[in-house]
Length: 181
Image 1 (cartoon, rainbow, N blue to C red):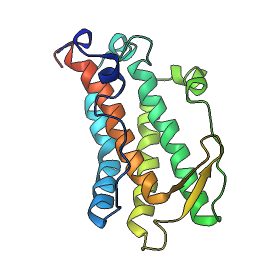
Image 2 (cartoon, helix red, strand yellow; image 1 turned 180 degrees about the vertical axis):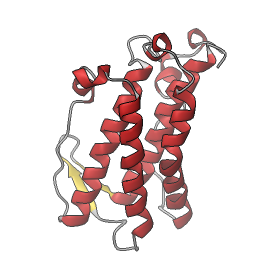
Image 3 (cartoon, rainbow, N blue to C red; image 1 turned 90 degrees about the vertical axis):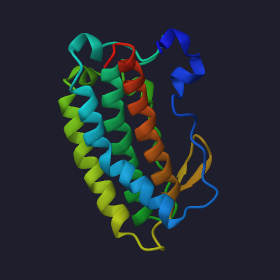
């Protein structure tokens, strides 16, 4: 299947939009942890196959390049780790939103993807270490996203970032399918 046969919605959300779980069961949280734990290796296994021209290909018309997607994952998950730590150490802190599109235009997004792959490995080690240490008291801790006016629990963040991991990995693998990779 080529990207031309997919709708814009399918290109944007190859695994569908995030669906907030009805309940955060131990099984659901363990699945999220496993997804987050394995993303760096799964991502590396895919992008290592790509040359510079392929990395500079967008996953959809008007979208980011695959290289930008890799760098975005590191930036986004770095912010997630900081938000989780704030929620663990403060009472419902208000987090600092950031411009994802603005960050994607910065000079560090011209770096080879190895820099972000290494960052993502460390960030995910930290996230998993925290998640695996949690008792039932840490999971419901919260932070406020002031632009969205939404209070997030850490358990919702774990589910969201597991989805986010698979969402962007699917952008890459879906694009690779058009090259027969």
